[in-house]
Image (cartoon, rainbow over all chains, first blue to last red):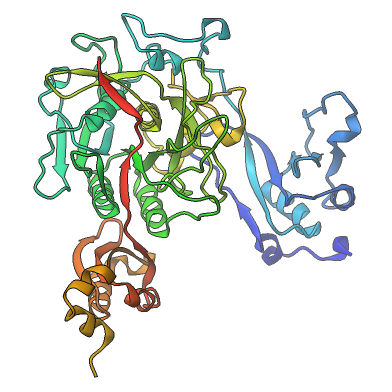
Length: 415
Length: 95
């Protein structure tokens, strides 16, 4: 019988994944315990008798919402989703799960969720959003204009088709650049890279367009990894990541990818690289991909965004609905959408002589998230790598759409 | 006896068909010994083009048939055939 088993330190750690307490995250002091699917009443009974925790079951509350104002030593089991909320210390939570013989689970501190606590969300009545004389609809949707942060002191790398180094909107800005494409300069003959750099790091007051950029004071680092036809190889991309990590870029935006099939795993080399980048203080952000044709077809999140250590960004339109092309979280183990950002009819910078262009795609959504990550990095100087990633995933507005399509929700700028 | 790698190298046109570009991640504990890992990979047929020391990756090309040998090397965490990446934009137009 499970409850007869003596809980030892080694058992507590066997099969248990404990999420670390994150720098910058605000925790309630309670613990969330996630169990394997299929946990039912029998396990609930075992949990009730274990470790002295008084455990209620949410379905016992009938049609009314279960109370979650737990006293110390109390817990609440959400059996339908296979999770429990426990007001005790982490060891107590692990002990509970081990006694119930549920080895595949996660214990993590419960956090305060701030979907709209620090920002004023765009009201539903204001949808669909449109560009104004002062800002593009995308900046309005993610609350950039009211943010007090500008990315000052933060290095943001854009790995793409290069950049128009002479663009007048970036005059006087410090830009570090490097081409990893043989025989091609950093100068952008395609426009995609200039677009992405514009969204992530464009100025507060552009010359002849509404404001389109987010981290206006960030230190822009441009790595050209794609050719004039906007394609390249993994080798160039990995070289660009290596360069950006070496330049201490807190944020690395890579608006590129290649399709995967349903059931595919993530690329191991990229995952190693992304995890090492995180450990070195650099957060990678990549697009979910544009292979879907909603509502008929949803394609899985692409490579390399399907790596667990890379933020995968989906796209929404001006009504904050999932863009028809935006890929979904169909594959497990990293193939989920992390969050979404504006990705339809986006205005940004273009290489001279055009200066401005309009684009759509998860490529366009990705630098929105990169720009917000730079604002967060400025707001939380100690949060880098995994800590910055976790802050980013707490800075969202909930959307009425499946997690499969929007992850935690719409990214929001810190205020 | 000529090894498979050596024989294929001598075969001109066939070589380009069977040779693939690869990215090799070394294990975490071997990142400060990446040059030694590169040397071991070269002995197994890797045409080594660059080392990304900051993230612990070797780039190069290899005969397709030599991939399993590379993957089984100590201090090699992963070997993957490089693929083409392209942007995730639908269209763009001047404003």
